[in-house]
Amino acid sequence: MAALKQEISQLATLGRLNLTDEEEKKFAGDLQEILEFAEKINEVDTENIQPTYHALPLENVFRDDVCQPGPPIETVLKQAPASIDGYFSVPRVIDRE
Amino acid sequence: MVDDVVIGLEVHVQLQTQSKLFCGCSTKFGDNPNANTCPVCLGWPGTLPVLNKKALEYGILASLALNCKINQKIKFDRKNYYYPDLPKAYQISQYDLPLAEHGTVKFNHDGESCAVGIERLHLEEDAGKLVHSSVSRESYVDYNRSGTPLAEIVTKPELTSPERAESFLRTLKKQMEYLDVSDCNMDEGSLRCDANISIRRDDGSLGTKAEIKNMNSFKAVRKALSYEVLRQRKLLSRGQRVVQETRLWDETTEQTKSMRSKEEAHDYRYFPEPDLVPVRIDKKWQQEIGFKLPELPDKKFNRFLDEYQLTEEAARTLTDSRPLADFFEQAIKPDVSAKTVGNLIISDVKRELNERGWDIGQVALTPAALTSVASLLEENLISSNVGSELIAELVESGGDPREIVEQRGLKQISSEDQLSSVILQVVSENPDAVADIRGGKNQAIGFLVGQVMQKTGGQADPGTAQKLLREEIL
Image (cartoon, rainbow over all chains, first blue to last red; front, side, top):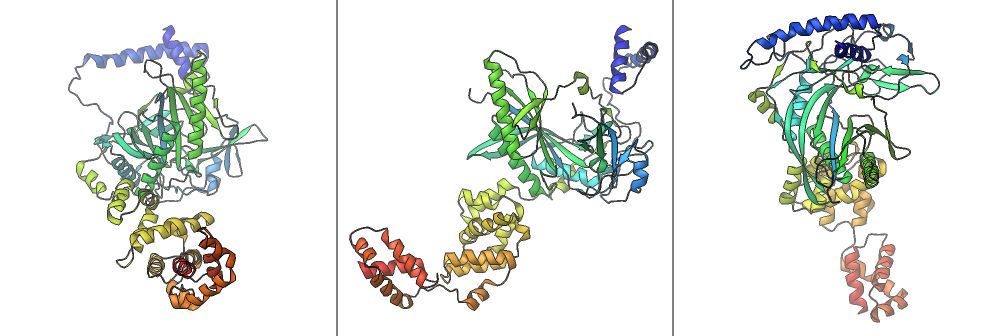
């Protein structure tokens, strides 16, 4: 349980979620149940079963290489928390990794 | 110490489709910020990506050229990380079923033939571009590049020096240009390269590697990796250890710097992309694309050696780019030698291109005009100097070389009768030089040939002039 709680805490950090200690405990419990439920799949013999990569029985869905205009820039920037000179503006970040 | 350097490269090649990998936005470089964005590449909820067929075909073409095995069944995966250049908070990439694997690239390094294994080639979308404000505590994001198709090519850690890594990268770039799958413009980021580099331990096992990023030119690749070899050697010789980390190349200080990596940042939690269905590439489709494979640089080089009897250096220069090689072949006609045409391109055309910073596509000179200049030279109708001047003019403003030569009286005087009076004059005006030659100082003849050239306005054939001078003096 303690290990799971730590995992929840790390996942929260990766997802930029601010969880309280109480929430971490609750989600750790939920995760425990989910994992146990998923464990059941191990009871099935999957020796000769091909892995499923997609729920739909479809393959090769493509589009042609044709350009289509997007929405006007005003609409695009309306979705930004803030914008300046056509750019999305965000709190300063340093270079990645 | 020999061959203890171990380098592997990760190269991102932007595929030159009109539209992005999963949506219809234009991939054009340099448009206004966020002008080429839509709900898909901005990651709006409820939108669905659809794979660009052309991007996949370019990827297959590149894989075939790198001698990779194409996987018949491939899928896309989500690579999760949280950063403002990535609006969905995941990048659509490929994890365990990449487009292609197990390739090899042969390349030439300083006359030595080398080869490097290709681990894999996969398709992925590019991220947006961040600009960091210098005045405020803000960063600005342009998502025009977000969703642009990339082929990521990963080599095996088999490159044994920074210089070899550079030679390989040059070969790879040339191949992609030949295939016409990317413009490979490094300034615009169409070809980007990261490297893993380590020094082997004394027992031959692999040392701890560092990952180097931000190398935006061939020179930067060579310099950054050379710096890193020295840095790691210094650490090891002092008994210290190399830390596994990502380091950034700083162009101005010419050093690599640690990025203070957070361990957790590398937890990408890949999982299959549920919004895209798998892709099956059957043999037939693979063959159809294979038919479109052009003659690659290596093959063209060997053919040029055999077919045109060029020197290795000439063949290499002429196959440097596909348009240049095509121009050369279009200018070859039965009545001129390939060598003359090749030399004109290598010495004169190339010089004019370098002076202007042009490529062969920008010249007013036509292949037919180049053929004419070559035949004028072979017929001994013009001197090589006039040939050079003609090329310079034709590159700039085009025209018919034979007409220009006729109109301006640029024909070379090689008839002995026409030259003999000038020869006599030069001999009588320069008794000292004549005496030197008679006294065995052969190099003085050059001075006299120069005099003949001057008196004929450069039209004398220097070879004939020299021969006549010798006959007159000795």
